[in-house]
Length: 83
Image (tube, rainbow, N blue to C red; front, side, top):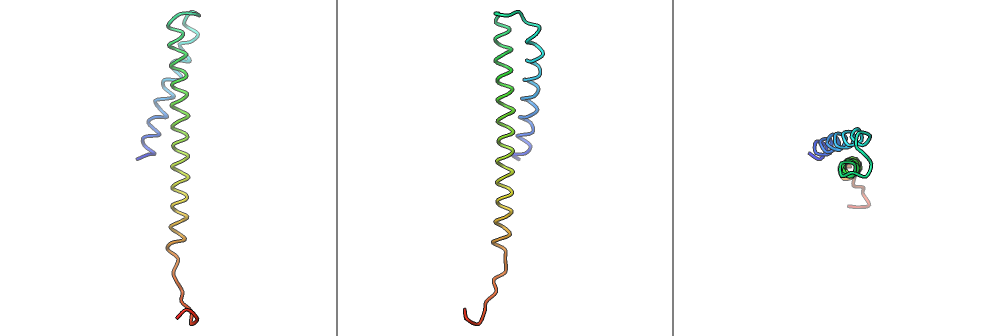
């Protein structure tokens, strides 16, 4: 579920970021449109960075959980000294 959500956020961030980057050259300097375009670019960049960070953290956790499952599922061998 986290993978689907981060993929959707990544797409949204790219859409907002690219759209605002395309609007910046078309707006006049010092106008409200330019300010909104720059803020949208920052928002899109923040969304992309956040979704990539969340994806990496979930990947690390999944990898760690998989490694721990291998350690927990090892068979226990008893020896004569332990009995």
